[in-house]
Image (cartoon, rainbow, N blue to C red; front, top):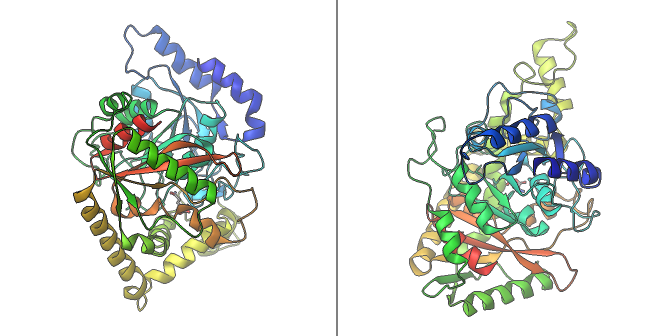
Length: 454
Ligand code: GLN
């Protein structure tokens, strides 16, 4: 199985560019170990997987899509990496991504864009475009992504694959190169809901190495997916988020969403409309909080500790080396966010910007709490449009940011959310995603509803 996927990668990845690094030797050695083991280590033993290049691996470079980490081989495995290895999952390689996970199209990668397998002239979503594209191109049956504002779900939607952002704290962040620590969450990507559930159970769970890890059992996601596959949603209350519709949503996406809601009803769910007024403020709040945390997290790339170091020929001071390296090592979007975040956190502006954004964050959590008193899950389109053309939004950060309009509230409040394929748009024939949101630690609800719908 590993060899078949390596052959597929060798044949088509020059057109897709899902991978930044392929470790054929390591993958085959891991596969051989599974073949030789007396009992399989897990239900996923021997199943190949593509790992987003933001999770550390001791046997492969980890770049986070940045020039600044080119060639860096970490001294330790991320907890997610370790759990995958212990489960006998065969890691094929590391996937392309927007630099430090900042973006919605994978065009911010320092190593060139990934192409959407459905149409190579289009983006595969981002920041985890490589992971989702590898699934859609049948280069891997499973992948790992990370989701700070939508980077698992939006690539899932535009490539016609499944992507899950678990409850914040449900999957360890140890060894996940930090972008915005209070939002970042690793999660499973797959072609079916059940596959995602099996992967979720492998990577989830408490980790003392991550102080924000939740000390609770992994929700029963595999059992929930199997239950959902029976196709009966009687007794499940589904809330349609009123604010996520209207202007800015492509007609094909809206029609697909309406059909999805009808299908949920046909499966027996009780559907009601729910209003979450603070969700309309999620995007501006996110674009203050995420850059603020990024400006602090990315201070560690100081030319001393990791990767790239330029102009260290003895003619420059340490500070000059630092600033010349950062100038060369970071791309434009990363620099924009560092500047924005530094500004928002500066004394005198802190209350006006960061403080206000944190208050909005609380309001969003309250909207979720109120909604989940009435319904079991919320639904919306995952993203307002299908995959756009490569190059179309690179000069327009605002247009790029709008791709995450519907996904960001769940990052700000920390609850679980999934994107499940919702057919093809009748406008352009490209994949559309249905987003399902559930309360924190009720990730299993996503899988029940997602598997019933799929
Ligand atoms: N597209 C969003 C951003 O640029 C989300 C990224 C992510 O989830 N990592 O910040």
